[in-house]
Amino acid sequence: MTRSTLLLSLLLIVPASAAAQGLRGKIGELFIFGTGEQPLFLAGTADITSVEAHAGHFVPSAVGSNATLISFLTSAIGTSIAAIPISATSSGTTFRFEGGVPVQTSTSPGPIIGERAQTLGKGRVFVGASVSQLNFKTLRGVDLANLRLNFTHANADFPGCDTIFGGDCTLQGIPTLENDFIQLDIELELDVRATTFQVTYGLLDRVDIGVAIPIISATLRGQSNAQVVPFGGPTASHFFDGTPADPVLFASRFVEGSASGVGDIAARVKIGVSESPSTRFAILGDARFATGSEKDFLGSGHFAVRGMGIVSAEFGQFASHANVGYLYREGDGQNDAVLATVGFDQILAPWATLAADLVSELQVGDSKLTIPDPLTIDEPFRRLIDPTSVPDMRDDIINASFGFKFTTTSGLTIVTNSIWPLNNGGLRPDVMWTVGLEYSF
Image 1 (cartoon, rainbow, N blue to C red):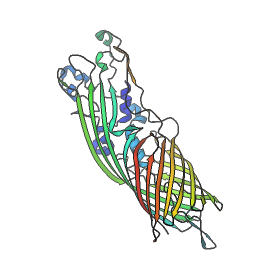
Image 2: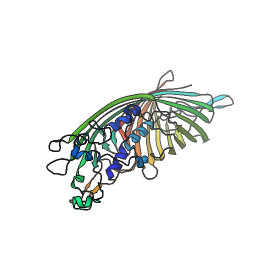
Image 3: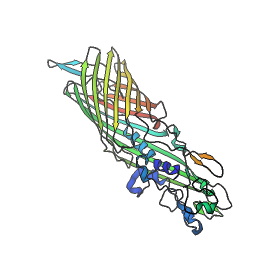
Image 4: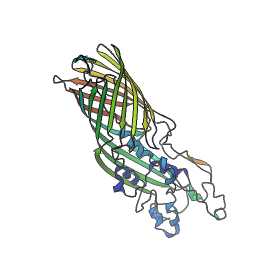
């Protein structure tokens, strides 16, 4: 079985029913052409009795044996949507009570993405709502509008093959038609809007509990253009339509769809551990439940939990914070990650605060979503066919967050923020824009 089988295992879930699999199934449809129901099945070849055996030579037969790799692209989409950052657990001025009297513990409205160590104070409530908009643009640095995949021919070896074709049929390229391959160019456009509602309650002076509920809307459009690249000969053995003497070697497919619903709900708890006049330390636990539909790219389909240590300090109008933690992801196809965030917020005016963060998510261990090596064709001369334009690399995520908080006379805070990718790991947008409202009481 050729390495092209592994590549298709990475990028494709064969849809038993496109309707049953939602947007996730739409990705699979991009690999099906003509009247065939299997990916890369050559329906035109199947209609010609003399060459019908060639119709399935590009259909992978080992998808089931590669279950941990079966959905490279679709898993990347689901994981990225589920990982859309949720605003910090607390905002605005925070308090603690001493002898029944509230004592202010912060002057800054706080960060937007990073976490500060201050808790709200017993009995206080923070509520917020935000809308984030993003359009995914690249996968491991490769433009989603220009993904290229190359699928090579199965290595056909059978009793008597060596005698019939006059060569060692265990070699890729014997018979000569094994040199044919299918070049597949894919254009994907994925727009996502996340509307998140969150509430945090000060259970005790040093204990906050909260929940965040995202409502996700996803729109997918995709087109695939497939080209059989024949090695040579007066007639063709592999084609989408036509005849061996007059073959149609090109086919295309267009899909689109949209879905909306609840995403992966997060439950959070923050515990203040220690404090001094200018610095504080806390720990945060955050669990994300697989409540979003995996088949419609509304969630990752797996439970995830993170734990973080938080240190923050205030120096007049300037406040800084650092977060270090670990993200555990359930499921065989996703890596855990080490989390690290550093940032600050600066009061510019009584009504305006600047907030900035450097946010990183560093992959733990070797990637569970690997790309196959190039395939070697041995005959009639040795050459390599690269299976894809997507590189085999780590999916580390490093982002820069930059935004403002504007506090109104009523105490309502308006939040604007942007998140910019600083590296090429994973599935990424050019920028993610967020606008929101926050209120503490």
